[in-house]
Amino acid sequence: NVHMPKDRVTQMHQGYGFVEFMGEEDADYAIKIMNMIKLYGKPIRVNKASAHQKNLDVGANIFIGNLDPEVDEKLLYDTFSAFGVILQTPK
Image (cartoon, rainbow, N blue to C red; front, side, top):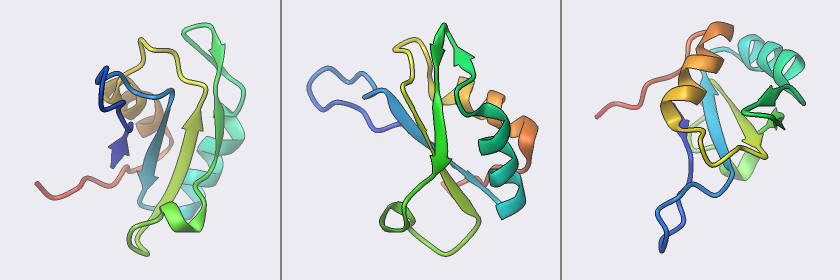
C-alpha cells in the first residue's frame, strides 16, 4: 500500500507518504538503504511509521518525508517495490 496524503485545497501531496511492506525485514532494509538518498534532488527521510499511523497489524509501515512535489504514488511504489512485496489494498 502506498499513500500520500493530499492538501484538501490544492490537491497536491504534502511532501510525505507511507509505504506498507508485507514483511518487517523488507521495511527495515528499505529504511537502511533509502534514508537520506536524493529523490528529485531532495534527500528523503525514511523511517518506521509510528504505531498510531498503523491501521491493521499487517506488514510494516514506513514513513517517507521531504518529498519533492514531482514525486507521486507510482514513483514511490516503483522505487520501494525493489525492497520487497508492498501490500496492495483491496479495492
